[in-house]
Length: 86
Image 1 (cartoon, rainbow, N blue to C red):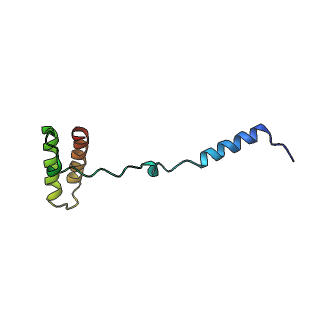
Image 2 (image 1 turned 120 degrees about the vertical axis):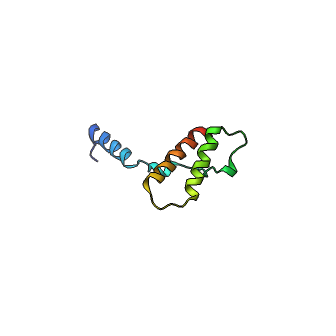
Image 3 (image 1 turned 180 degrees about the horizontal axis):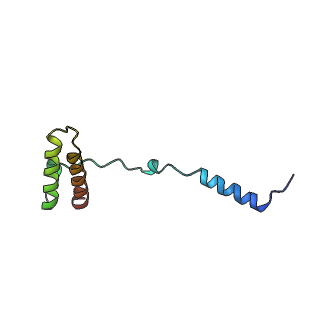
């Protein structure tokens, strides 16, 4: 039986380690959070949180005609809600 040179062993270990990277999307185990609405806000929510949720609910209830500014505003309000309500 031939003996492998140390450099070949190192190369095989590195190649095997790189090939087994887990998919980054599959590493999350928690289900996505449900969207806060005016009806599900806690009683002690801040006024900024309440205002952002109300405006976002109004935009979503108004019907989406595919307008990009409206979608961008909803995304911005989602970020505000994430920062202030959770």
